[in-house]
Amino acid sequence: MTSLVALIALLAPAQAEPPLLTITEPRPPELLSAGFEARCEGRTLALQGAGARRPTSDAPLLKLDGQNVALPPAALAFLSADRSAYRFAAVCDRGGAFHVKLNRVSGTADGALSFDVHAFDVDGQGKLTDRGGQKGTAEGFSYR
Image (cartoon, rainbow, N blue to C red; front, side, top):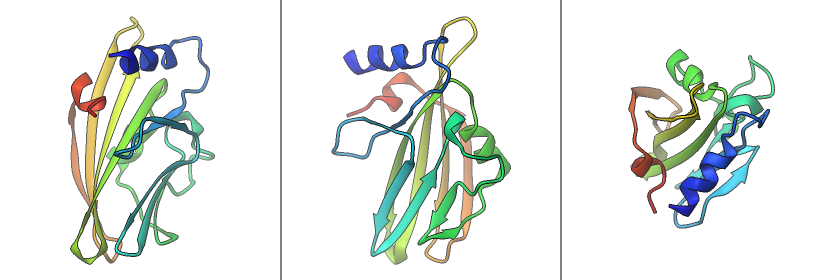
């Protein structure tokens, strides 16, 4: 619960740029501005610059072994929310495929928190399959 209180403090309206929150189990939460990286069978999937920290609107956000992977518009919009923090989880599958789950917590205008989830798969050849989004929960965002 302490970590949720700290997260709420991070999303305070006075903060101009929200940090990128990344949790990769079993490590504790870390504040990162560079993004998230996962490794699987010698392959690397990197998600760069989510939220307000995205360098430019046309910058590639997702790379597999250094090669750009196009994100669908729904995932781009999900990653571009203001006053948001993100939690990324990637599961490795055979053949160097990744199953990615993005959790987002956003501060609303009335001071409440909104939790959302977006998921996609990236196969060993770099083909992305969007699994869409849904409402999330505080428990889903902050699980240990």
